[in-house]
Length: 323
Ligand SMILES: NC(=O)c1ccc[n+]([C@@H]2O[C@H](COP(=O)([O-])OP(=O)(O)OC[C@H]3O[C@@H](n4cnc5c(N)ncnc54)[C@H](O)[C@@H]3O)[C@@H](O)[C@H]2O)c1
Image 1 (cartoon, helix red, strand yellow):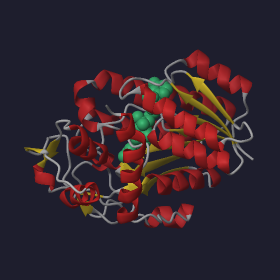
Image 2 (cartoon, protein in one colour):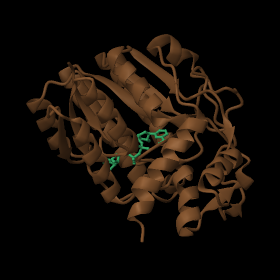
Image 3 (spheres, protein in one colour):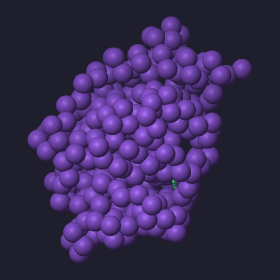
C-alpha cells in the first residue's frame, strides 16, 4: 500500500486515477481547488463517484491550491507520501492564449512548489505533460528524443517548462521525475471544453461549436482508463528522469471521430467551419515504444469502444441534467 498525493483529483483524469489507486488499496490525498474553468458541479460529481469506490476510506479530499505553499508544507508534514501524481493544471491550449499569466502561475510555479516539497521529503513525482509540447514537429510518430523546443502556445510552453524544471530538480537534488505526455484523452467525465463533449453538446443542446480546418486534423485519441493505468505504472516504476509518451499510437481524423458520435446520436451535428488556429497542430501521433518498454504500458480500449462509453456516459450524466 502506497500513500499518494494526487493533485487535480477532482478533474477528468484525476478522478479516474483516484478510482484506480484507491481501488487497488493505496491511500490517496486528493488536492484540488475546484476552480470554475468548467462547472465545478462536474468536479463534485467526479468526487462523488470516487467516494463510491472508496469503501475503506482510503481517499481524503483537500480543497486547496498548489500555489499555496503553506498548505503544501502542512500536507507534507501531516502525511508521508511515497509519490506525488501531479495532474493539477490549467489545461486547454486555446484558453492559454488569452490567460498566459494564469497558465504560468499554476502550471509552472505550482509545479515548482511541489518540486520543493519533493526535494525536502525525497518523494518521486509523476507529472502530467502533453503531446502539444511537440508543436509542429516533423518527426512522425512523435518520439521523446525530439527536442520539443517550439511549443505553439503558453499552455504547452508552460508544461514543457515544468518538464525542464523537473530535470533541474533531478540533477541538483536527486528528485525522481517522470513526465508523461498524454495524447488527446477522452472518456466518461470528459472536460466540457474538449471536442468529444462539444460535439454532443452541439447535437443535443445546440451549443455553438467551431470545427477547425473542416475536421482535417489527426488526433491520437486515448481512452482515460488506459491513461490512468499508465500513470499507476509510473508510480510503481520510479524513473530517475524520463519523458514518456502515453497515447494509443493510432491517430484518427477528427472528422471521422465526429462521424462516430453522430452515428451513435442518430443525428448530424451542426458545427461551424473555421480556419485552423495558429496555436493548433494538424497531427498528433504517439510513439509508445518507450512506455511499453519502461512501464509495460498497453492501451486496451479501441476508439470504437471508447467513443461508445463516452456517448453512454454523456447521455446518462450530462443530458439527463440538462433542461
Ligand atoms: N485531457 C487531456 O487530453 C490532456 C492531454 C494532455 C495533458 N493533460 C494534462 O492532464 C492533467 C489533467 O487534465 P484533465 O483533462 O483531467 O483536466 P481537468 O481540468 O479536468 O483537471 C485538472 C484539475 O486541476 C484542478 N486545478 C487547476 N488549477 C489548480 C490549482 N491551482 N490548485 C489545485 N488544483 C487545481 C482543477 O480544478 C481540475 O479539477 C492536466 O495537467 C492537463 O494539462 C490532459
